[in-house]
Length: 336
Image (cartoon, rainbow, N blue to C red; front, side):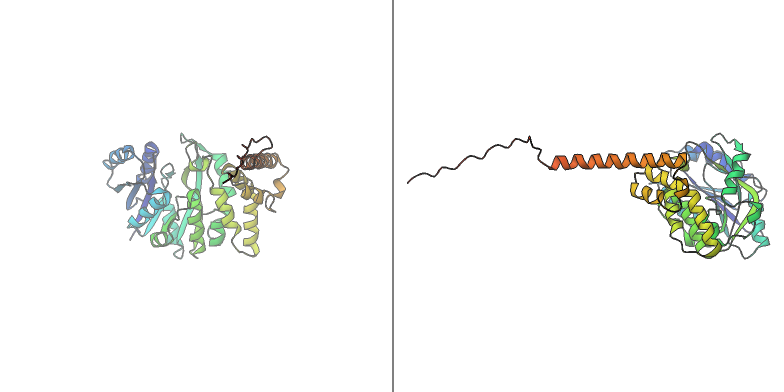
């Protein structure tokens, strides 16, 4: 019997892209058992798009309008809890599956019954859906998604730690997803989920096949100026105790991500964290690079601003030398 797969899509204010995501799900060579959409949007535009698609397919599409909104972590957890298939695939509302995604990922489970999670490579596409092959190859290489690491070459912990485990479009045992769940920790909740799944001991499988399209545009969470996912992920990985080859992988990942982590710390005005990472052994090779010098300049600007503000506040609390103080009136005793 074919294993039932639930596809869950957390949505927020991207109705047209959501329609593209849902259409990519119903165009699969191996059809999903159900598609569940949790919508945090303040309007009904997404619901209108879903109703239009629902009228042209026999696949069960469940739409849930969250009022009040649940936030990213709460929305994903609601979707995991609602899934009735044996396996579940999380898809962001602005991303897409390739037509053979479910078939490829389900075959991973058939050929490797001991695994609990399977995922492939991601194409990188722009806001208008244009795919960049060169950018995609570099992106997957940076996350150890190459032929060299196909299968379970990395341990589960290593796969989560160096982000081979993707932010979405992975196929996971539903019971495991419901057990681990998302934590409400802001922009790093996707990374945090993958890391904790890997720490649970669940066996992970990577297939050297493109299975999804990951959209990076101006509206993407990863492009927001106050995004702090890389900063939080940096400290999560830094605190993991590992040995041998895992330690080498961890240290290389920290070195590669240290510059981005410093930049996000500065953008979020977490200057203490920025200074700590900047002068750490993971960043020292980047100190005298153009990017490193720029980050140092930004840190100095923020530190000077803090010093000036602190001095101004002290000035307000201290009476300056020209402060005028009205003399007290003398008290004259009256003779009786």
